[in-house]
Length: 170
Image (cartoon, rainbow, N blue to C red; front, top):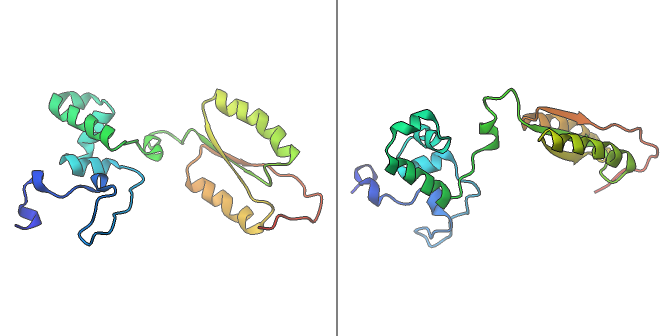
């Protein structure tokens, strides 16, 4: 019987279900780190839109049967589904994250500035992340681009004049 003609109930496990299952050649499939909406849709034989409606308790989900809603929630629990942070922020004008680039985490200037910034971020419920460039020119160039690609609402660079010629070497 070809894959095309197989009934849904006997299909092989979806990517989400694969986990550490044995492959035909007895090797082990890699562990998938995150279950996607697409994985759940394939596993349940439903559209991604249907899965999204149910998980977000959208008004249109009320038009689905209780059985379908139950199956979606059950599969989401089974595969530990967590929505993508970036997908959740698509409708917003930005994420609720802030990026900070600093020369070094251990020196006094950074710790003083971040003490006040952290209080503000926590109060406003921002998720923040920091990175250090250790005065390495390639990191000073690369990190702002990397941060922007991750979609923070804002990022800022802590700048301090270097007082010695001593540089961090890895």
